[in-house]
Length: 317
Ligand SMILES: Nc1ncnc2c1ncn2[C@@H]1O[C@H](COP(=O)(O)OP(=O)(O)OP(=O)(O)O)[C@@H](O)[C@H]1O
Ligand SMILES: [Mg+2]
Image 1 (cartoon, rainbow, N blue to C red):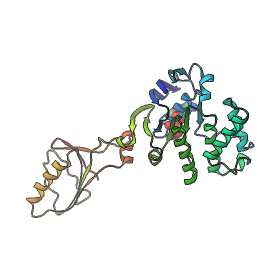
Image 2: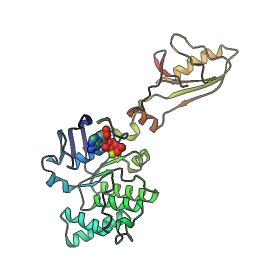
Image 3: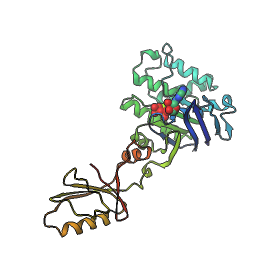
Image 4: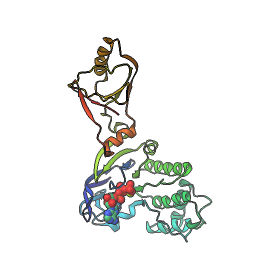
């Protein structure tokens, strides 16, 4: 079990991590999601023992990465966000070098290299210098280094950035296979579809704090549906004390509510008694996963909220 315990890290005055707790069990994949600057790379560096936290600890099966980085680090495979490859070395030289760092030699090293070459679809590229690889091929070679030596933990920081569909597929398949073999994976990404393909749990980090940990499908699912009503004629007469009717756009009202049925009933009452206003369309929309993610991490804008009979309603311009 990988356990991140109350980790804090400041860079000067910047609070990069504000007391992060995170557990990743063997065989499970946690997708670390969060906007730019949220603290994903800082946390990855702390987990790998490359960056010392100001407070807290990282334990791998009880052994402290912070106090004994030399002993624990070799069980952690890391593909940093920035490509870390030596341009003049071949792919094979990279795998050989990093395999040796994990203690592998001889036949076991060769078998391990073969397995990683197949997993990351590097066949045909192993004798090429990294400087002569395409961007996507470099990405696969860079990621391959993390997989060598059967690590117990894999930390992959945006491993598919700039990757095409095939490279992305190769990396995702390799991650899933590693997890099936019992590796605990922390996978930093900005792509929600990747999280679904990985079948990963998510941890959402923003401003250095984990604000959600759980299944992707449940992220923000307490978010209310939106009722969109289009009408012709005069705006429906809703209680002015409770609803602020914005004249724009004409002919449409949007309400976000936990009780769409109650809101619709109220609207129908108003509309049915009117000879000048007619219902054109009515729709109850569920927010997308991306909407819910944005609501969780904040996009810097607060929607204008109004109250309608005790339910929260939102007018959209
Ligand atoms: N070496 C550094 N010195 C000073 N501040 C840093 C350093 N590295 C990161 N930061 C700051 O720490 C915060 C967290 O950065 P971090 O790189 O961990 O974010 P991230 O979630 O990985 O972002 P991205 O999605 O852009 O990769 C940011 O405010 C960043 O500006
Ligand atoms: Mg980063």
